[in-house]
Length: 212
Image 1 (cartoon, rainbow, N blue to C red):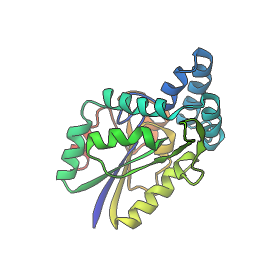
Image 2: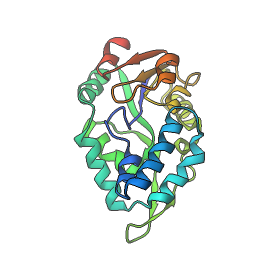
Image 3: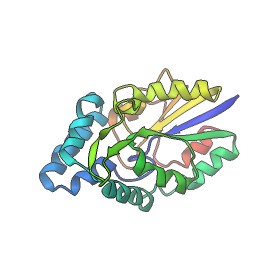
Image 4: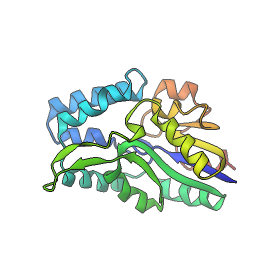
């Protein structure tokens, strides 16, 4: 039997919100609009599917820009992330990233941390690297999509314990499909998450004692 930790990416494994960093490239007006939509979703006021396509259509990111965000994730990785992943694995936990962010940007961070499983949203580009949409089959592009992933990975890995760790409402939603939901507030303390998560931490390294 397996023990499984599912880690959010943006504002959890790394300080940045990838979608907001992409929006910054399009100027203050676009950034403000996208940031507002992101905050509304992360705090639980707006369904993810309501804003997911709209933000990307506003930004029209290129493949090159997405790859640059991947390097920003690494540059601003949570200070205790690497040691925490190694410690959890030594304790018998399997670790995966489950994110509403973008696969192509998150994979470099995953490799940096030694995490081999990433469940995120793959963006689609043409031969010149121009944005052409996203994979509509990606569960994490919609409300309670992380729940679908948690159930699937539990079954796939025959996990008897599943823990979800993250900063936002989509992580909190996994209650019921995860045995423990740990809110993370190292970069953004969202009151709903702080109050309703089963546990709340400010550094990823706190997971080691919590899950011992």
